[in-house]
Image 1: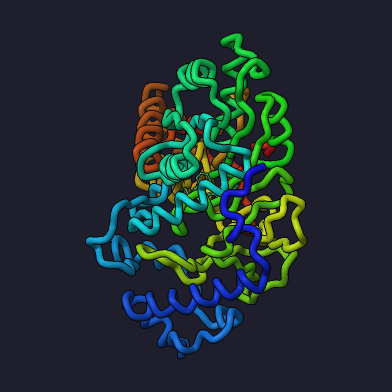
Image 2 (image 1 turned 90 degrees about the vertical axis):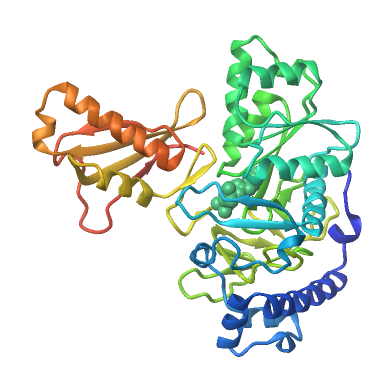
Length: 434
Ligand code: DLL
């Protein structure tokens, strides 16, 4: 298997730490001198650029949270001259205030490098054809993969997400060797292929890079057998760059973290204490090289642990275990991040509904996420003629669609029919067996 950037990916720990320290010092200097938000935060904890004399000093830096990113929207964390920006992405979350990633030319160059590493881990080389089923646009999946494939010199089919029949046609006619999309969509493609009479064993497809949503080893096994490919887990988030933060090699034993650009730590989410390798906790990431929107100790809310045992592929970077969950209750439905609170807000502004609801997420026969929102309605409405119920159901459906960007099934239920809890209400029932 090709290793895209041997110097960075196979560096000795001394060489890597030297690069990391140098970049960390530059980064602290950069945000201290250019971002008032960070200068104030650093001053509050008595840290200035000269305080960073070793990598261990990273623990003296304050955390950055998603709320702070929202509060500083749109350009409060910009660490470069706005005239140097060449691209903007925002999170798929639809909470009103998106999280912004701003890129300079150098940032896109770095992104291309880490995505070339990612695709190479799945065996992609010049001469291969990458069918990119991640959405193009503000979402980072589409363009991230695109830049990586361009860097490698592979042939890229920028089909974007959806349009299943066309995906299958392109895959067959252009001899796609690598597929990139969400893991659930790859299974949907497999189902549709069967209906179209397409046999994956007769296609040129060899591997896929799947991420942007949680999945599991059993789902990997299903994808690998149904699509007859090698399936690789890839991780990233808009705040840090998009995909390209960490990805799996052919050993499939954790995702190699691009530590020369992103410094990983695992913390206890309740206390902020840094945990040793191998212990489960919240992943915190510091940008080591980013001009547009660098972040210090960003709390991802993703739960995993770090592994540093040598990997048979020859890369020496630390790996993160497949993600184990999130510290918050963010749901990822068909790749769209949404929170129960958004659903609640919509319900609460619609007259006739009660503040008792439950969200059921499942993957049906199609392998795509389905969301059902069960809402208790007022007695008077429930006993009303069905047309009143239907109007209310449609209104909730439409308002949720405009708020979340996804279509939910709405089920209106009788007053007091949803189970009450003495402690925290269980709002979400996630039946997806992933
Ligand atoms: O999902 C970036 C991406 C695009 C990653 C394409 C991989 C492939 P966001 O929309 O900002 O960015 O969502 C980031 O998605 O904090 C995780 O909770 C979740 N996530 C991303 N990759 C994985 C993965 C993109 N491999 C959030 N496994 C992250 C589980 C993942 N969850």
